[in-house]
Image (cartoon, rainbow, N blue to C red; front, side):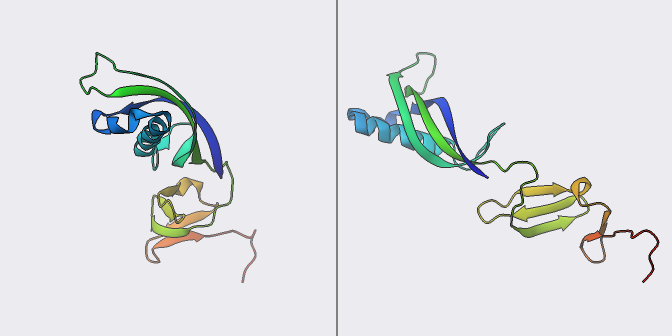
Length: 145
């Protein structure tokens, strides 16, 4: 469900944060702040939902690009993120946030946007508008109650 993934990216340090760049430890602090501003609570395609920065593995030299008007320093960094990436058919425990004819929205506590479309519901299921929820309607091969 949760995995550590390594990422290499260019982290921009704006001029307002230059006071953090006076030493190696301070450069690391500035890079960490840049990563923390960019990644948590973002979905990274093919990786999952970034939860938080785990650590910074490497920080390269800084460069000021003449083509950008911001005047910031751009540092190449390699770091690890904690990512929420459930595997297919993994069982998760959550609470129903919303149900409608299109499907269900489930909350996991830290993330409330898990959507289960109606076509993925256990077959045979249908949405019952009167009850306001999804109903599983199994057919037991002609058995009568």
